Amino acid sequence: MKPEQFIRDWGLPEAKRLINESPEWASEWCMDCKDYINYCDSDVVSDCESCVSIAGLERLVESLDLVKKLGGLQGAKAYVPDGYKSDRLKQAIRDHESIYGGGDEDN
Image (cartoon, rainbow, N blue to C red; front, top):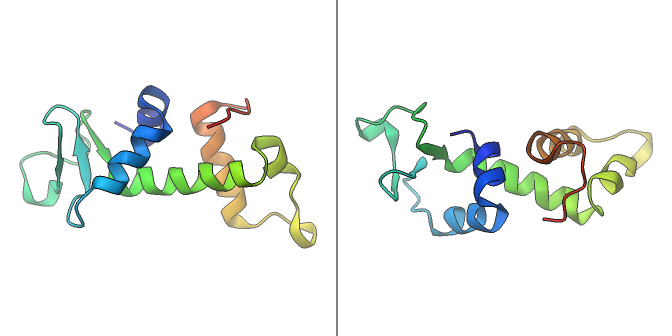
């Protein structure tokens, strides 16, 4: 499962919980097994539709937190330090839109 879909289906608080509780060795959370896995050390392949990437969730959560810190999607789009938007901010805006579309979800 793509991390964007996981956050749409399960919500940002659940994504944060999985990240915070994940062991250092875990690469994914398997929704079928209800456990963390390292797909390199198991029979589960990384494109398993029941698994979500911990690293992918971490990146999206950081992006959503950045957008929220700047006042939501519209605030992030309006924030232009020194006349240009940083690459990280542009990525955060794209991530937000990939999850919530053009709307300004308060998550």
